[in-house]
Length: 495
Image (tube, rainbow, N blue to C red):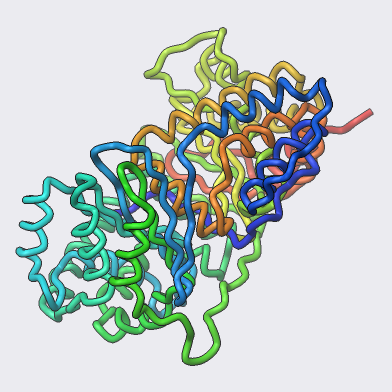
């Protein structure tokens, strides 16, 4: 029950409008005015009327409605009229809020959520979900914990009631805790066989040394063996507060009905802390490396990253475009010299790797921007060299055509991701925690469209050029250059 790390931000209306063209700023501003109840006429020059008409067409999508309850819990939904719906709780609490002693508690608690409540035994819960034809699931990330259900729209009240029951009335029985302790220990063994997970855990450990983000989501084995009921109860009472929870829904849902359900089932959630509210611990980035050499392994797994920014930072979108420009490639998918990514062209032509994927992992106040690669032992050095060359190209010579293609691909990927009630519900929940609102698609597209080659060069120079990277490598990595040589590849000598 684990996914790749997700991000959380606290920005609301601090939109990076400085990257928008004049027409783009006008469209976004008009959208924000309408969102906040301004209905007056806004004069639009003739040359912008076509853009305004296009914007009105884009606006013809289901509205994301948001209501805040008295205890601070936010209710957000999008009604698309489907016969099914997804509803879930997005909680601003993950492994980053843990310390060395209780690291792994958030994930342990997620496992315990479906093991019985004061109203339902585990068997009763499983039978009820099965008889509804519904699906119940959960995951934990470094900054969020999520519980969600997918069901028929007519069963929305039952789904909300079940979600409320499992986060407020879980029995957390000693026998169930001991049973799940074994399950989590086996899950840790399975994760150790997933080398991508291993490498990214190592990357966080070296990039965020001695901080909360450097610890794993599952926690160390010693903690899993000692976490008890008191630790789980303390985590719930400390973090499961109204202002830190979003009830999100998508599909065939009525917002008014969802509000009534939220008031009835979540109205008693506490809104205040007994003492001071737990602060998000700061996490500093350290340019460094961790190497786990094992020449018995057939392939080398390597991740290299620089420090990026959180979701709310104005440079996030240019970095997303740059990330899309580097792209992804897998040998099994085919593709040749006509691939849009230059790095993919070189990897294909030179047989440099089995696969690579660029990533832009964001958190509240920091992030990791980089590339993960799987290589033969003899091509590690060359693949890393060409990767750094492409990074330097982003800082110096990227063209408008390349940026335009990446912007189109990014927008397409965003829209394809929002296919179905579950990804839409997840998008609503995550953005409500990140921004305290859901950014309309037309606004997001306007921000992406406003990016040009000069913006990419400036932003990439700011975060990539001559910056110390974090590196994690596992496997037959004898040919991986030493850190000082890799560090020297983070800049070009300019004339």
